[in-house]
Image 1 (cartoon, rainbow, N blue to C red):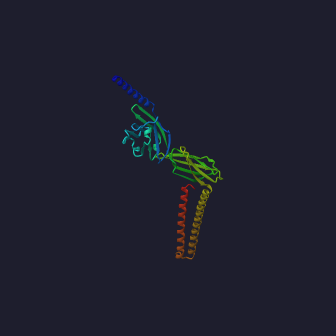
Image 2 (cartoon, helix red, strand yellow):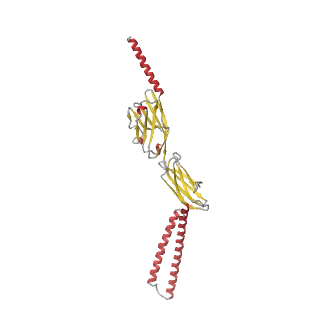
Image 3 (tube, one colour):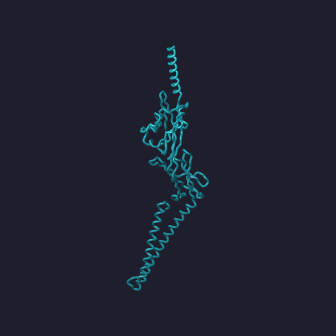
Length: 315
């Protein structure tokens, strides 16, 4: 009897062990979302789980970057392991374990930056079981500001410039007319700064003088969000023509005053010389000095205005 019980117990232990091995072999790691999108400055939750559901409280769970195997977070022995993750993730990751008894855990990355964009892997390890799954985190940045302005006129029409910065990934940029039609660009370019933000620049040559307005549109291809800025062409061209007419008017007035001052000076001098007076009257000298001073101030003002508008490309 005793020998029979021992044999039965041995068979039972072997059978249980085989069941555990079979169960471990049937486990697999999955993720509810293989593609995630997060905004710069926001947060992202990278979740993974074992299936069929079972407790993973005493398993080792690791998240790491697929492109460079950089460790993001490690859970082992019932708690997070400090000091092994990459420095940039030490103070910005949070372990989410509310459903750890059902085999589901996650990490939450705070203050997302463009450098967080890329492929991640999540692995579970236990005695007799090891599996891994991957997920892609796409980071999006929405443009900070947009500018639109009339750059300069040309023989074929006039040029409108559009500027926008602070985008990721590289956005699409286009111009639209007053009726919503796409206006072909004459040039378009982009650059990236040290933080990998895209800066966009586009110029539009408008030959159709009947356009009432022009709109610059920038679209983030990842989120589908669009940013617009509008320019009323009638106002822009009126302001430009007004400034040009004002400057030409000032220049004409300045030339007229210069000639008037010169002729007055000559006639006064001749009149005094004809009377054989050795010098001008004090009143005449004061009047001429004031005229000359006004002319100098006026001329300097006109010159500064001219240089200001020339730097803006209006001349």
